[in-house]
Length: 156
Image (tube, rainbow, N blue to C red):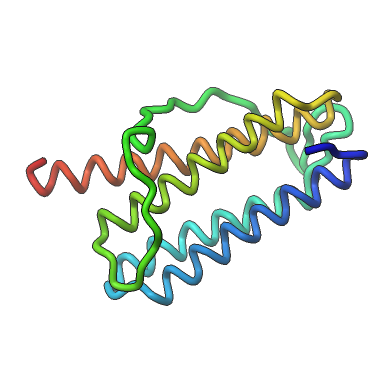
């Protein structure tokens, strides 16, 4: 993918965050258990926060928000989703399967943003995609941890 300017990069990223939020909102409506609905809405909210972050961030030099500077930090990758087969979301899915679907979605988003980061020609674009990589890595780690905790509770 080629981007001509900062606004194209931000527009693309906002679109991706909106798609992710819409997925989590749809999945929440289709989930049968209230706890799962709440968890999915929490992730939808996180994606909406990313959208707002992208609207508020200025990465034309260093990534700065209107009030604070964004702190880049390394997020551990436990690679749980790398070991899973991708499945399609279905209404009434078991909690474990919903987590698997969400983990794979976050894994794909992280890979996309990492690929765009490596293709970026400017520091501006690199900063935006580093920010997005970090945010998606946080989601992926949270989902993988939730999955591991659930499986441990189930005796696996």
